Image (cartoon, rainbow, N blue to C red):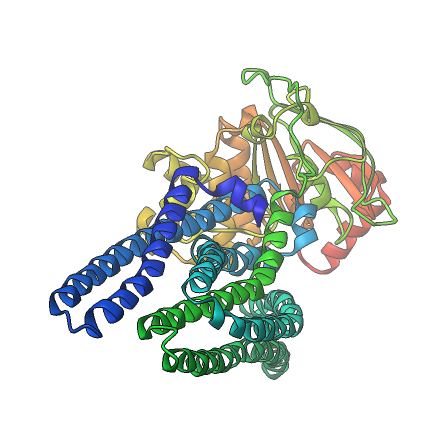
Length: 577
């Protein structure tokens, strides 16, 4: 919490919140003195003028107290909300810099919880810290001093009530704090199940597993509810316990005070003032104890947020990065590249060597799990290689900044991702200032122009994840977005899989004959031989190993793995090679 406060709280508004809070405490503490004087010197002596004077003073002090309290609330609330806004911005920016393995260490659902629920907990406690946590100890100490000065003989009541309050708070914290900590983990669990249910709803329905998923969510929800209920029941006990102790304290004060008044050794006004101070003392103690109950929960949230913000990036820019010449001819080179996933025993890619030049197409083919997508993810440096070097335009990608590297590359991922908005906004995601002519040109190459016109043109609505388009349409829109970006290396990671053979052939022909694409390197990952047959260089992967390299004709004649893939697809009637 202190680390987050130092990083994000602004000094001047925070100081203003503290100043207004001190002024509020002074006003609250001055009111009992006025009340005492009003009773002792006005009511008892029947001095109407003095009553009006002191009554007016009470109204003025109360009004000033209200104003400074509003100022304290304003600065405390705005600072707490700004801290939350800054934390969300920092987490979002930092997570966008994460490599895939960094994201997997936390999990998607946990990252969402940390950037929402955990930050809300921090915001709530931050408001309480700038208001009650500073106000309560000052009020507690000052009211105790004033009460003792007013009538030290009545202060002995607090020797009983304050220890009782302390014991009650310690017991409540002992049972409640562990429950609040576990609530955060259970929130992660609920978000995970709910997220899986939303993203996998079609699979759930297809396998008729609705009841199973509902039961799974019900178990997690009931576990969360049970824990939360226990925690808040325990915390709720604090108020009746505090009220009971406060009531007995007031009874004791009145009992002792009445005896002193009857013996004419204390005024009625002093008794009322002392009771007011005692209420302020006990309420301050209660508010302070409540904060100490909720601070551990916020502290747990702060640790979770700091864990994300302080997590070191796996992929970092080099200190003395090499500059990339944008006018240099495009090229892509692999020099004995090997890669192993974290904690994996076996290499996912072993000793990959290849060199592709401007105007050439590199195709990668292999079975499921052969390492095709792994190889593709190494090019934009989504992972670091274990061994070997990958060069883009002649420069080692590990020696250039990620910004420079990504400016050279345009990629269509295996899963076609579209953003909610319009077709135009999705295309401009690839090229910010793309004109309508440029967009239509890219859509024509991607064989997407016809259905875009039918959908309503470039302003046609795209729902989240492109849910209002078919799988093949989403792929073609994603390909168009890739094409529209000027790049030296274009990568298509199994992005033709949902296309029929006719559309696939037309698209590849359009890519090959486009003048801009002829100046670049194309990398196509596929499982269908018909998609890679006309590539200049084909790499055959088998279980992470390079099983063969060459043209379609060479591999068809001499490579056993390629022949097996070809035979299986010919028997299946999937292509004609």
